[in-house]
Amino acid sequence: MARDYAPMSSASTLIKIADAAAARGALDEAIHGYAQAISQGHHPAHERLCHAQTLSGRSKEALDCCKAALRVLPESSFLHQLEGQTALEQNMPQRSASAYMRAHQLNPQSMDILLNIGIALQMARRPAEATHWLERSSDLAPGSDAHVQLARALEAHGNSLLGAQRP
Image 1 (cartoon, helix red, strand yellow):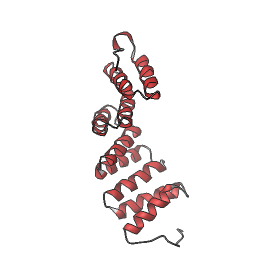
Image 2 (cartoon, rainbow, N blue to C red):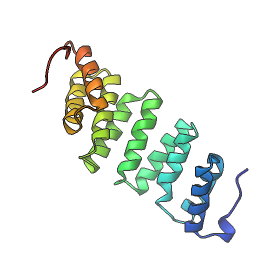
Image 3 (cartoon, rainbow, N blue to C red):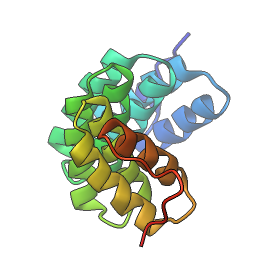
């Protein structure tokens, strides 16, 4: 059962309590604590709240949380990535790709973001675009999972990497 710590605790204390609850797997308590910290004006708790909702399997609530949190923290690459991940889990690949592309604008050196853009576009049945992003990802991290995803995208697009070497 979630406890009400707000009357006796500062936002930073609420975050510590919620973090401890999340660490021990008490996600309902963590969600409640993060929400209390937000109600006290602690904006960074938005990221933690959305993440806890995602971990708890509440995808719809997590998507709603990301949307609300991004109004407060629009430059949070983490929130855009979380929105992308959660949208993909909800079979919303277009929304996922858009969220990951915004995350990429904020964090252009992340191989994981590039990979996830490619995966989302692949799921959205946009293989040519997926191939572009997966190639960029594999260029940043040779030997990574991006190569497997790239091969799948190229095969879906009518090409094959079997026996071929990339220049």
